[in-house]
Amino acid sequence: MNLIAIIENFSTKTWIIFSLISNVFLFLLSISLYVFIDKSCRKNKLQPLDHPINRSDIYLSILTVSLNCLLMLLAVYLWKQGFLNWKTHHSVITTSLETLAIIFIMDFLMYVFHYVAHTPIIYKLLHRKHHEHNSTNYLSLFVLHPFETVGFGLMMIVVFSSYSFSVYALSLYIIINLIWGTLGHLNREFFPKWADYSFLGTTKFHNQHHQYESRNFGFYTSIWDRLFGTYK
Image 1 (cartoon, rainbow, N blue to C red):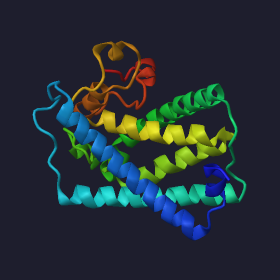
Image 2: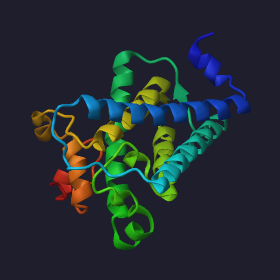
Image 3: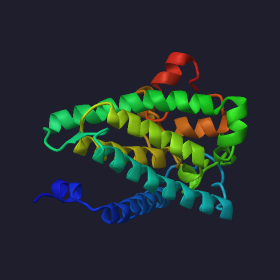
């Protein structure tokens, strides 16, 4: 029995444990990647100082991880009920194309979601806490209002439910999403200079959003910001 078949036969208790372990692992992976790049990268900091770590950010990060666990369990429940399907046999080419399709769709939806989060009322209620990090640190990615975490998670589940993607494409997207979010919240430019002209959402691109809040709402790319006039 292969790994996918074993996972598909998990009991409810095992799914809960798996969700907890996998989300804690992703959280620690993000922190480790941030610290490793910050210590090993020779480029100057984008901001003079990292945003200080405080107790409320730690609690909010733990809450974000906890909600991500619940969202994963919701996705599993929908899968068991037949609302979400995945395929276990796909070629490398098909998996790659599906992963790119998910990234492209999510990039647009996240742009819209992020733009709406910056409307005055919603910003004050939900998104302002994240922007207290004018400079960033290794927790910045996880410092989100609970409604933002749930909104993003539900948006992801809706996209995953819209088509029978390869389970490998779904898994690859989740890893890319975590890595890209970590790179975007570094305080050092990770990407080479040519990346600014390749429509990628670089570290500097997102760092400028934290300084100029009405610009650079994109996540993986700068396509939508360039198209809708919010690019800096």
